[in-house]
Image (cartoon, rainbow over all chains, first blue to last red; front, top):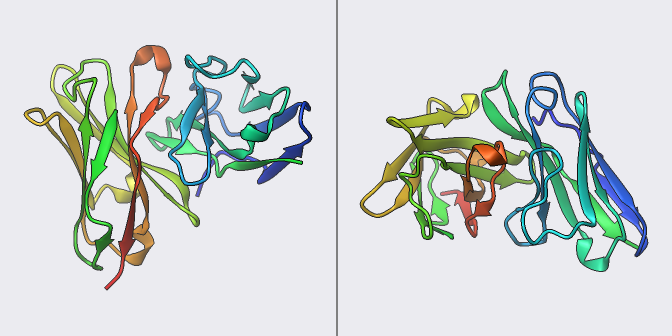
Length: 110
Length: 122
């Protein structure tokens, strides 16, 4: 079972700001950087945020990441219909000596 | 680009085998790592393990699978592979290969294969 806890769902209307939380522990989020992935139905996850807050080339600046202590957050500002997807946080866990994922948050655009 | 190959159906107690062909990079890269992940409704996204080349070849495996998993590399064909032994229906999942590009990216996985749905059933 995942040791990164995310809310199962989040929603907003177009243009709104949506925030997704990811709660971990000292062996993962506090000690290592957090990454965020977006997964559209039927496709592989896509890297959205790496090293807590950095965006790969091509990812809109509407997506931003932050981290404090044992928690991290992904914010989507100016929500768009194409943002409707599953979002996963991930980090290396020093105790498990492995990479762990949250169970995902489904974002719905109302 | 990563392109996966392998059967979509494996019988219980048999070995699941998948390959991931790399284009645009090298499995022998001294900065990248090559990873297998699976995804199922009950377990979510699960990291299985990785292989990488530095002064020698290294592998890391998920603790829960350490007795059943082997990840290898083939430098002549520029690919890496997954073998999972003694499979059960609980190993039914979509399997992905992915690249961890290097230290500047932390442990992020920036390129993923297309995914292979593997069903364990007789």
